Length: 374
Image (cartoon, rainbow, N blue to C red; front, side, top):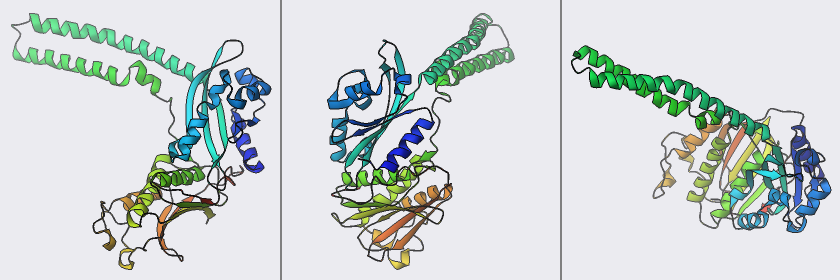
């Protein structure tokens, strides 16, 4: 089972925010932990939770871990998208009422890269749902209040244009300007003040944190899809760091794509993560030829393609873009010729230290057999 320090950190982080946490053993499909406050949020006791989740129970709570066997099978087949899953649904309480919940779960991997536990977080989103309904109601009211007088103006100007056939050109131009302005305002209502648009405003906050270990594990999963052996070695990493997740994923994907293009099929890739110089370093090394010495100083230049790029598809923008993304985060992207051979790219990011213990200090720290990147 997941080591005690990691499990404690996960539970503490989840429950400090008022959420529920559960840990399910992937081998036995039995709950190893359920937050004590589950009865307050969901109306079920811990005993109820255990009874319904064990042995694939089909009660109202089974939806918390629905589809786990298929998810494990797809992950084993190389589907990295199943590492972290987020769902939202209504869960029925024992008294027949329903509570809107968001469930975020992630597969914790053992030293061999195999799913060991399912870590889940359950969040009551009833208040958020109510806010969304209120925004829709407000938007509908506001839309109606603006649209009614605009419709009146629109109808009046159409009648004037139709009836005042003897109006001079300057007057007709004024009618046209009024009609055009009215059409523009009605279009703006549709674009910016529709109930759907207003409900969406503020309902989804842009993510600004990312888990460094998750980034590495996603990279390993992508490598599996590409059919490459890959090892993953990560020391103690912080649970999260500030950053734009999609940008950092893109930077790592660029490094992966380059490694796949410039190394022979079947050669092993090596992903590592560690704390260094007040931050973290995520590195990717291949076992192919190193970057030609004459190209090392220019490989991050915009549009530059090295001497070994002949016959290989590419635009020369990948490394330039990856470094730009990393530098926006206050980090750096560098190249090194590894002592054991091959090219290694090192992505360094600063870390703001906090009192929280690193969550990810032991889930994945050794070789992933038959892993590939893609």
